[in-house]
Image (tube, rainbow, N blue to C red):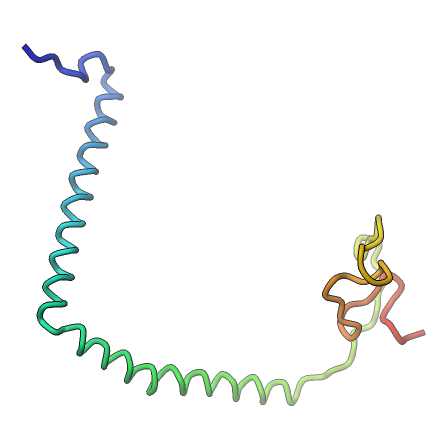
Length: 126
């Protein structure tokens, strides 16, 4: 006589165990179905047509899209002001509790003197 391994489990544990088994069955069946569909598509030569479609889309849609974005960026940068904003010494910004281990110890690793001010203001300004 065979005993039920789930007999000692309470009702919530039985439901969770049944749900786990059910989800595994669904996962296996969906994987098998996906494999069959991919195998059928590969056998029918569908991949060649899809490759040609993506190649055409790349040249007709993607490359012109990148070109339009580059043109937009170029035109907007042309009209952009390159002046530094006024320096306001906020007490909660640019706090230096210890020196940085590179350079003079006051500049961050990727410091840009045109954009990033030091604690006492922009470089080159009085």
